[in-house]
Amino acid sequence: MGIVATTNDSGGGYAQVPSGVHKARCVKIIDLGTQRQEFSGEVSWKRQVMLIWEIPGQDNMNGEPMTISKFYTLSLHEKSNLGADLTSWRGRAFTETEKQGFDISNLAGVPCMLNVVEGNNGKARISTIMPLAKGDEMAGQYNETVIFSLNEYQEGNIESFNKLSDGIRRMVLRCKELEGNDIDMGDGNNGADIGSDDVPF
Image 1 (tube, rainbow, N blue to C red):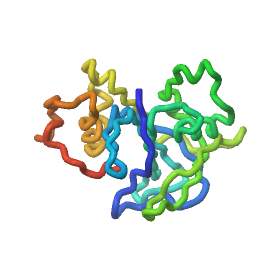
Image 2: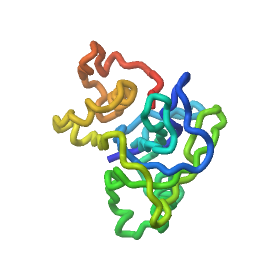
Image 3: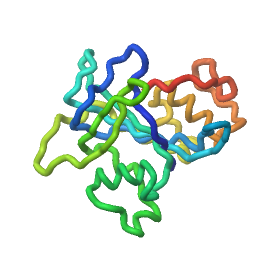
């Protein structure tokens, strides 16, 4: 399974999670496959994942809790964003055994504290993830838990894929593992026709 790191799911015109420390719960874990990256003219491919949290204390003005996301490269190296965030979230470092294969789907439904800051682009982003204090309570989960595994999708299990937003599905279909596949999204678009749309989170 793979995961990436960047900002949140708040697109233009949508209310963003305000800066500050918030109680949150991980509700979606999405394997994005191996995605193309380009920086300073150099192209690379990295296995990425996306985590999405709901924030019960922040309402998006339609009765639902706000959500925020972060992309990660799927790596537990101590200098990786995923490794650093999970170490902070757990409150302890990974053992050598855990580093050999930690199933990030175990994060589904797990509460935490998110320190949200304003990024250079003006959008809210997660800077730090911390464990929820012992004995601290938070509202029950609102959004359905979604765990999307690219391996399961390739084996024909499309149930979790169909629960993803169109933007995220398009990103999944651009991954290297599905390169050249002509996949029907059910809306008249297939993998070959998908451009570089922003992913609405």
